[in-house]
Structure formats: C-alpha cells, structure tokens
Amino acid sequence: MLIVTKKNNDLRKKSICHYNAIILTQGNLIVTITKIDTWVMLNNWNILDCYTSSEFLDKMEEAGVKHVAFGGRLPIRANPKNYENSLVKRKTPSPEILSLKNKVQKLFRDLKNRGIKIYLYGTNPRANEMQPDSMTKKHCLDIDLAVKPSEGYWAICSNTPEFIPYYLASIQDAIQNFPEVSGFLNDGPEFGYEIKPGFMGHMNNLFTCFGSCCEKKAKELDYDFTSLKQTAIQLRRKLMSLEERSLNNLFDQEIEGLEFLSLAIKEPKIKEWFNFKKDSVSKYIKTLNQGIKTIDNSLQLGVGSRLPAFAPLTGYDLQSLNQHANFFLPKLYFWMGGYDGLYGTVYRWAKTLKNWNPHLSEKTILQFLYKLFGFTLPNTNSFKNMEKHIDPLFLNNNKNTWLGEAFPKEFFTKVVTAEVEKMLQQVGNSNRVRPWVNPVHGGRSLTPQELDLVLEAAKKASLKTYLYYCSLENGEWEVALKHSNKLQK
Ligand SMILES: [Zn+2]
Image (cartoon, rainbow, N blue to C red; front, side):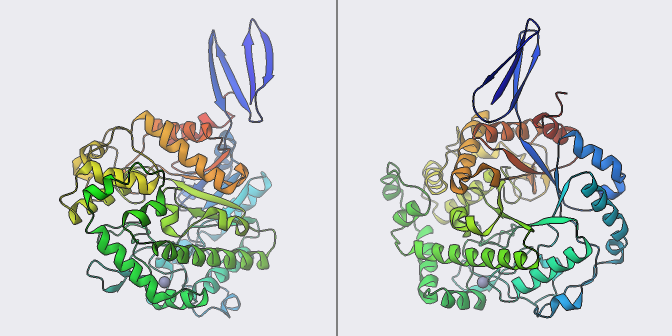
C-alpha cells in the first residue's frame, strides 16, 4: 500500500505493502481509499438507447473501467456450419434484437479502440434460447422421493451431452461476428443448493440431478448412481427428522460444511454424492475451456460460482477448477428474499427445516445452518432477526423492494470479509478472483451504502478486482466511482 500524506504542504510517502492507496487530506482529516479494479457487466442492450458510444466510453473511463461484459442476447444469426456437431440448433433472435447488430459492432469497435476489453455473458445457453424439450432437464428427487423434471431458467443439466457442443457453437458464432471479444463468462448451470419445496430460484434444488444425463455421467466417472440416489434419499429423510439434543452435542466440534452435515445426519456416503457433483462440474468446465481454447487460444474463460459457503453444495470447488479457467467470479450476493442472496438462502433453509422439524428451536436450526455454511449471522438467533431486513409485504414473494432494515455493519466486516478471504485462499491468486457484485435478484436491494460496505470488506480481505453488475446511475454508480482511483483527481 502506498500512503501519501499531505502535512504542511510536504508530501511524504511510505510503503506498507504492495497494494496501492490514495490518501486525501482536508485539514487534519485523512481518508484512505484502496484501489480496486472495477469490471462492469450489463445485462441487456439498453445502454444503446441511453448513451452514444462516446458517452458510454467516457462513463467507463470515469470509474477507470477497462473491461466490460455484455449479457444481452447477441444480434446475430447462427452459422449452420458451427452447429454441425450440435444436435441442437440456435433459434434466430427477434427482429428487434437483430436490428441492433450495427450499433453493437460500432460500440465494440469503439471500445477496442479506447483500450477497453470486451467479454460476453450472453453466450450462456439459457432456457429461453433453446428449443423446448430439446435438451435434458435436471431431474430432482422431490419431497415424496419421486424423481421429477426441474423447471425454470437454468433447468437444463450441464451433464446433458448436447450442452457443450451447442455452447461452443454459440461461442464460434459470437467470435465470427465480433472479433473484438476477449473472452466469455460462464454462469450455470450448477447443481442447486436450496431445499424449500417448489422454490423456483435460479439454480434451485439441492436434490438434483437424477435424470438420464447424470446417470450416464456417473457411469463415465465411475460412480454407483443407485448408491448416490440412496444417499440423497437418506439425506432428505434425515433432514426431516432432526433431533435437538444430538445436534446440540455437535455444535462445539470444530468442523463445518459437508463434513459437519455428514456427521450431523450420520451419513458418511454423503461426501461421495457431492464428489460426483464436483467431478462432473470439473469435467464440464474443463471441456468448455478446452473447446474455447481450440477455437482461439487467446480467448479467456471466467467461471461463475457461489460464495464459499454454498459452492460445495453446488459442485463448484475452485481448487479443482483452478487449472480449467482464467479467472473466477464467485457471487457476492447477500440480499434478503428474492433469489440467490445469502440472507434469503439462510432464511429459506431455516423455515423449511422448521416446517419439517416443528419441535426444533429456531436457535438450534440457525446454529445447524451456521455450521453447515461456515459463517454466523451477527445478532441472529431467531427468524424475526432476519425478517426485519425486508418488509413483510415482500417476504414471501420474489419482487424487488428497497424496504427493510439494512444489514448490521458487523455482517460486512466479519461474514463478507471471511467469505472473500476463503475464495482468495482457494484460488491462490488475487488477480484471478473477480467476484460478481450485484445489489439484488428479487428481494431487498442492497443500498448504495451496503454495496460500499461490501467493497470495503472485500478490500480488507485483499480483493483486487470485481465485476459490478449494476445500474450505471445514481448511488450504485457512485460506489464504483468511490472505489476507483479516478474520483480523487
Ligand atoms: Zn443431470
């Protein structure tokens, strides 16, 4: 860290560590702002209506942004040659999307000329871009222990054999039309990590996948699929018959995560089931990365994952994926309610376990979850402590809201910092950890002040870079400006 102090008009410098910092002076007040590299992600092409190309470039420059990721559907037609190895063919986008092609090409050329690198998120094969029923959906073990197809945005299973050929064909289409692109961001599908029955969150159900896709993959990876399914059935049954006294006896043990879960439900084979998930995700990412590098060895791959607290449940292990990706994008998603936010996930797990085990106290359920996820929410021993963070009107639906109490500062300084430290440790190189920062996906949106605290906490853990998926206006953008090193000039 480079500290610059201004005292009596005398500039002094001293080196503390290798990160850069700027100190502002206002009389005797000294403010330290550590640099963090902001990448921006935009989920659609609305910016083409809001800004001219040059206004957009200026906006990126004001926050020191040198990398932009685009999530909008690409305004291109599929090249049939690219799909010769793919059983699934890409649908032609709507005329409205196709009409944007010239504008997008101009924007990409202008970005490149200004030295800003372009990444694509819009090549992720999402449900709405595929022919209905043309790929195998994930199958979940339902509450009645029957196997049923999943629904929703990421319902397609990444172990579906048609998935990667289709994905790579889409990437070839993209590169042929937009040679300015530097790389791709992969996001999902992943194995779910929620247990609430019928919850249609983006990645949803923990009890996946028991379709033919995963049966074949288990055979290929040398796992006994019948045994995996039996283990999942046992986990479901045991999560529905937890005992207060035996759980309380475990809370002093210094273990957490899947190891704790295995002990708590007395099911040692559980690790094997999650190892299968981990091995199949590694295989998927490895094949995707090899395919991308075969198209063009200079193309980068960034891989999205959950927070370290949830990633083991989804099959993502950053250590085992390390050699198959250029960088990682663990999601710093914390909101209450909605989908995918940390508070909302803990709350849904807690309420579901209470429904399944009405005799358990709320305190015991929360302690069980803190051991499973490896963090403790400050001042939270009851469900009420969580419910205050969202207005009751929005607690049981997935609408966006600003209503509800902000999270305590201790949550950021302890939980957020610790989660970022874990992801940095798992990857072992802070230049390759670039978490997604997003205010909300339904539920209570983080305020600009909370987003600011997220970045402060992440920087305390020595994070150097992040991908900001945000509005380019008002408070959310002010946060990017504050944490760039541009505002101080
Ligand atoms: Zn599957």
